[in-house]
Length: 86
Image (cartoon, rainbow, N blue to C red; front, side, top):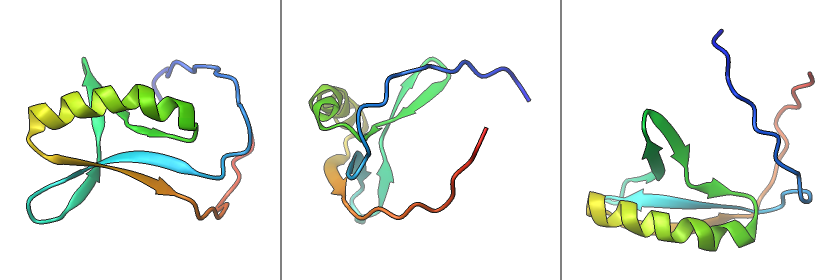
């Protein structure tokens, strides 16, 4: 396994909603938008509402470059599937 840098960001609260920017092609197929920086891919997904506005400008830029529609969706149903302990 390669070394993966771990960012320790503060947890803010239990996540009850997740927002994602999706690309939608002419046939109606969707995918989670990603920002690509160098060889790294960053999905445009957040569990913090205040981050949505910050991601929106990036999503607009990706939309213009890809010529696809962008849809901001909010997922509100939560089901814990598995807990991975250290």
